[in-house]
Length: 54
Image: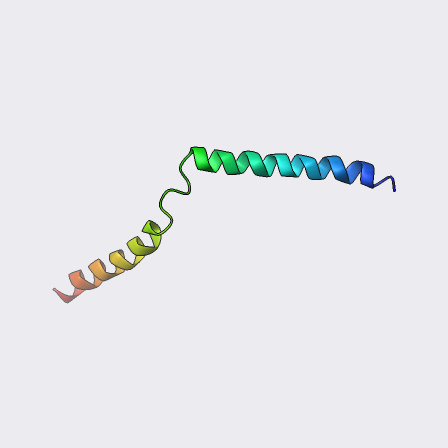
């Protein structure tokens, strides 16, 4: 039973850090362009193949 007095504050600290990290990521625009990097990888590969074909 004594461990619960330790685990509850630790879990609340983890929750607070998680919420703070989420708001930091939103403030620094980490979620703005979710599809751009995936498309950029495909386009870079396509551009490299075109250079090799020429």
